[in-house]
Length: 184
Length: 109
Image (cartoon, rainbow over all chains, first blue to last red; front, top):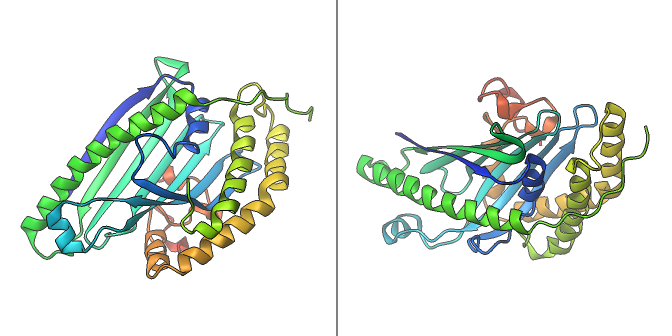
């Protein structure tokens, strides 16, 4: 079984401002559940100028009582994230998946940030698609469906909080005055 | 923000600071590179400024992951399939590939 969550939003900041903000998203007042953020790998490609980053994020999730019974006590759940920033195309893509509890359910999320077509200099378009799949580890269709539906609902709530948190960070970002690049 | 292991926090904060400062100058239109030569120079600048810190920090994270039972295996499982396979091997834009083609290159780490 697969369920989808899709969302399109915009942020009232230029694409570069939004992308700089991604690395400063945590902590924020709406993200108390995000406990740890680490870079696993990062490559800056001198030819293409692309920046590829892999991260692992630790999240404290409180599950409903019936899930706690199934999965045991609350603990840190981990998420793997891959981010690809392409300044030449002004595209930032983020793909993430839960590592923890993946034998029961996977939530694969794809996000893209691009200049907003209505205001490419001033706004960022945000698109998000999450594919939530129960993987059958529960061996019981009704529980799987319940888990999927709960996850989609929960995803929607978290997505709203995630957006508020990111808005907060983008609003408070301060940029350092920049020297001009050296002549080639 | 904390690292997965408190012993990596200091390295994490120093590396994040280094990268964030560099990345802001990389994208801010008033200082962003405008030619392939400038882009190359900017990438070199990142390596010079943050490369050593990056290696120390990520080594600490790798050790921490190994110390958490089962976590390394979960990561390897995710890396064994699209769209996560082959990401940091420099093999192109897996995020645009729609899940095709990179499966054979997973697990290189």
